[in-house]
Image 1 (tube, rainbow, N blue to C red):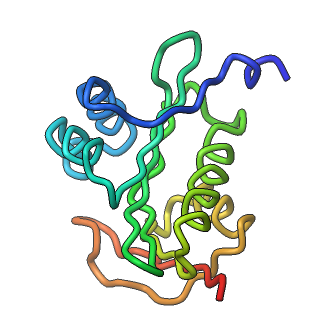
Image 2 (image 1 turned 30 degrees about the horizontal axis):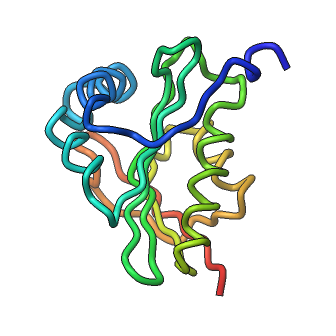
Image 3 (image 1 turned 90 degrees about the horizontal axis):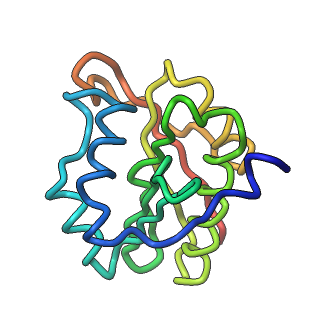
Length: 151
């Protein structure tokens, strides 16, 4: 259990916006990262559920979903590179799916780079399927659109 016993999952707050933006930059680079202003805004938006994972009081991951009636879109899952492969993304996705089902959403969608094999495997493990390819979604790459239907 080691690493996992020191993890704390909680809601993103406006006080976390700067650190979440820095983490997003570290994970996705300048072109794809979300800004401090974005995280500040989603922390206050009741249609969005963003979570952070702390280890020893330091934010090491964040993830979020936007819920609109019966449809949810996973916006992001970002785990600091040095904390990958210890189950952090699995914990976050599991918590997001719990939130989504409690809110009554029955359909979940997300976009992922085809080159992000680890993320694709994670989503498949949770029952997501690739439903289409979006050309030039990212500035330098297409996106797989993945979905999961609970209905």
